[in-house]
Each structure stands twice: as C-alpha cells, then as structure tokens.
Amino acid sequence: MKRYAISSIIMILSLFATITNAEDRFMLETEFGASWQAKNDVQIPNDMMGDRFDLQELAGAGPWASLRLNAHWNINERHGMRLVLAPLAYEETGTLDSDVRFADETFSADAPVTASYTFNSWRLGYRYRYYDKNGWQLWVGGTAKVRDAEIKLEQGATRANDDNVGFVPLLYLAGEYNFGQGWHFAFDFDGLAGGPGRAFDISLKVTRDLGENWRLGLGYRGLEGGADTDDVYNFAWFNTGMATVQYRF
Image (cartoon, rainbow, N blue to C red):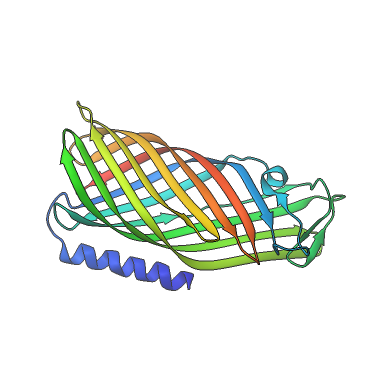
C-alpha cells in the first residue's frame, strides 16, 4: 500500500507538470533540521495484556535529523494542490525502568532494549485562497494523509513490533504575510481531532527572498497526536527546528 501511495503521488505530480507551463505556478520546498520528542507514550495491546511506557525515557529526547519535502501547484488565482513527503524515524538503545509487556512479548529492565519508531506521512491536498489583502494571503482546504507507522522493540532474541498503514483526512489552514523588503511570515496547519485519536501538524516560518525565484527561511514545526483504540495506545509530540529552501517557478 505504501509503494502504491507513493507511486500515485508521483504520477499525479508528473501530470500537473505536463499540463501546466505557466510561470509562478509551482513552489518546491525542502525543510531540513533537527527533531526532538517531548513525549511518546505507548501501550500495545491497549488492555491488561500490555504495559504503558514512555519511549522518550527509553530512547531519549533526540535530536534526530529531520527532512520534509513540500510542493504546491497553483492551478489559478484561487485553487491549488499540495504534496507533502514527511518521513520520521529513529532507532536508539536504552533501558526500561521496569519489565514491559509489549505486542505479546516481555522486555526486561535488566538489559538494554533497542527501540525503533517510524511515523512516515505522505499527503496530497487541495487548498482555496479566500483572502488576499493588506499583505496577507490565507488558504483553507483538506488533506488526504497516508500514515505509515511502526514501533519495534528488540532485546537479544526477543523481538516485537506493531505496524500500521492507514488513511487519515485532515483540515488544512495556511497563511502568509509580506511585511516588506522581501521578508515573509508564514504558517501552515494540518489537523483533526475526534473519535479515538487526533493529529496536529503546525509550522511557523520567517523567509527572505533571494532573487526572483529563491527563498530561504528559518522556522519551527510541531507534530502531536496519536490514537487510543482497543489495540493501540500511542500519543507522541515532536518539536522540530528547521531551515527551509524554496524555489518558485
């Protein structure tokens, strides 16, 4: 399913490029920096057969290298599409405060445990620009997100993991303010809460024009959310400090 989702996104983006030859319709952006986890509570299964523990205490707070790719296609003055490729993964070794039952295996506090965490996010969205005055541009829209997640623990010959690939619909909000001399403030938000879980992804950036097509910037991104179901309890919060490079054409 993951290969199908990525292939579909690439095909759609290639189609956009084929049918669009006007200038100033595309924006490609790379975000790179470092991510820290503020919390990462896990219980699998989410019943009396599993124990709740904190991956942040086991694996540490980080930092880990962060990379994200964003692409925008402005179909016309009002309507646009967006693509986001946002991998997130780490592997660290630490010790548990007490024995933990995880995914039908038991991990001891007497020996080191290697923890692997993956939460990749592949997104395709639509946005509508509803405001363009006084230096501000504001958008609203929706995002189709494919979540590729896995938590794995290893201790000697004992190994256990829980993985999940699923679809999540999100609300999208974004804005940009031009405060003069080529400087811009921007924010974006993907998120939704309700039912067994929630997902919030928000960024704040300050960027500077560098020529006609390039922008450089610095910013912060926060990623928080999780699920509380019969099978899984996992809520995590990641903070990212980043630099950005944009190319517009």
